[in-house]
Image (cartoon, rainbow, N blue to C red; front, top):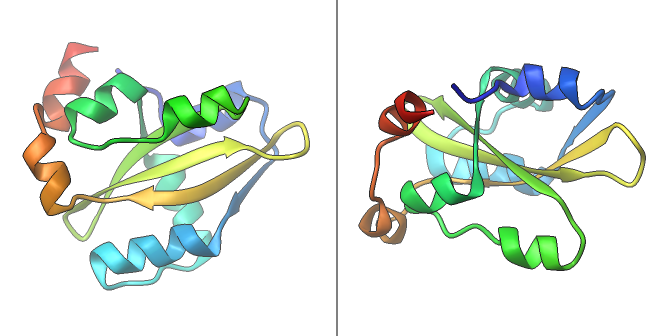
Length: 126
């Protein structure tokens, strides 16, 4: 079973999660609701990690390899808001223990065409 955002923060010894304005705007774009930063953090803490390879099975085309080639580590965390699947994209901040929620993915017509699996099936397989 994938770890939660809360467990990720604990294991990584994180002390700060900064949520970008862009990430909040993308949530609003997909749901019609703009959450506060505090609500976004709560959603993240309850989210489940999705590995880069699993993201492709869900139909998303993350920039994981480009970030990795630039030396930027990134992680993906899935949550549901108002019945809409969303994925928080995190990367390391400038300081140790700091993480940045840089963007939020959500389903589009294109991602739905590329989808091979439902998250519940992926979660059961882990």
